[in-house]
Amino acid sequence: MALILGIASAIPFAAATAGALFGHSPALRLYGYVALISYGACVLSFLGAVHAGAALRETPVPAARLATAAAAPLLAWLALALGEGNGLLLMAAGFLAVLAYDIVATRRGWLPAWYPRLRWPLTGVTLVCLLAVRQLGPV
Image (cartoon, rainbow, N blue to C red):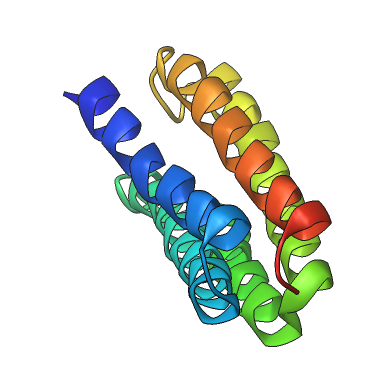
């Protein structure tokens, strides 16, 4: 089920990227950009919540892990605030940082062993979309 949901979660990235790059009007291309960075912020926040949820299962709750999990939505918010090229670049960096943390968390037994194998290709698709719109998009 995680694989199916993961693949489904990549569809809005691809659709928003297509709109931003190939929309038949400037307004549609801008809408594609806004859809991409907004959806990216939601997903990046969700990935932080995955780590918060894993940390909350422990007693006592590890404060450092909760703080690390909170960094993802803060990066997402900052990327939205920056907007345009710098926001997309920061968001891409955020996805890479969370992937790196996923790997560390898996090695420490905080997340299941299969999780990074799911996240690698999904992060790859996400990065291609974010960076393509940064380089070729309407902003």
